[in-house]
Length: 244
Image (tube, rainbow, N blue to C red; front, side, top):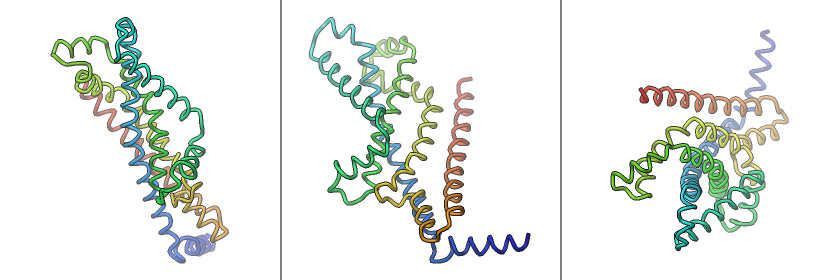
């Protein structure tokens, strides 16, 4: 047993401590969290916009169609653009989207991290949009009538009445999307970004030892996911209490 611990300690030192290779994991983790955080913000913004357009079209298309005014045609075009966006993003792999953004769309951008943030944010926005749309559609129609009775127009009703209720309903599903996004960022290394997975792979390549670096990467991801899951459950409990 003592011999095993000695060997483990030597391997650990050679893999992580020697030449400060552990710092690669720290830098990779920082980049992973940075990409995830800003991609989440972009995804939420895109999701709210797309979900509002699609739900507004679904709820009001019949009444607007009868009037045949400019708002109907504008909303119809925006809804069509939203549907194309959702079809393309949800129908193609995220790693292909990342490579297209990096090697074709944003070739002039020198910072790969910025490109990754935009790529993952745009990708996440498609899934968040459908989560939000489902939440908006599930809000009782009487809430819109309540908004009108308070003197709110449609946009004010959405901002002050519908969206807050929607966020509360979709929060667990939204947290799950964030967890998926954390793991999806592991493909950022395809375009040379030093994320957590890329850092582990670099250590493997330098030390010719795969077990420790990759297990370390897996454990770090697991800790992040468990922490997010814990926060999600705490938030759900608090929201349940606020309902009573």
